[in-house]
Length: 132
Image 1 (cartoon, rainbow, N blue to C red):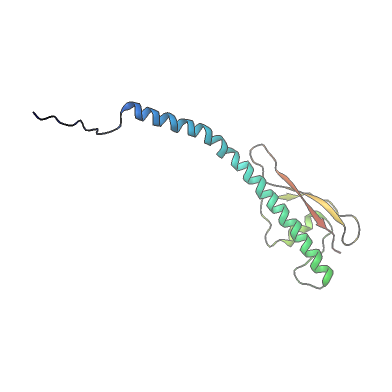
Image 2: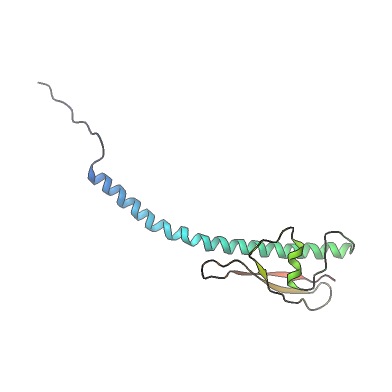
């Protein structure tokens, strides 16, 4: 007598339902994290631009302190002047036009506003150094 072995040709309905339920749970946990990443990315980008502006201002002041005739350096009297020190200032960002009071070397805290993310407005601060 010949007994044929039962061969499985696919997944059972229960196995497929379990896989779909597990994928649904993973999606429910992961999707809110990915949605929140866009705002986190914009905050990081705005902080990066603010750091670049602060660094450009410090480099400009240092270079002008050594030699006032250096090419590529420029006077800085208010916060918006610092954007001219960057090779290309990114679009969508604005700097509050605060004057830097005091003499050469005086500092001011400047506010950079990034492009809005949804209803949120992202801001960061940087230090600008006055260069006469």
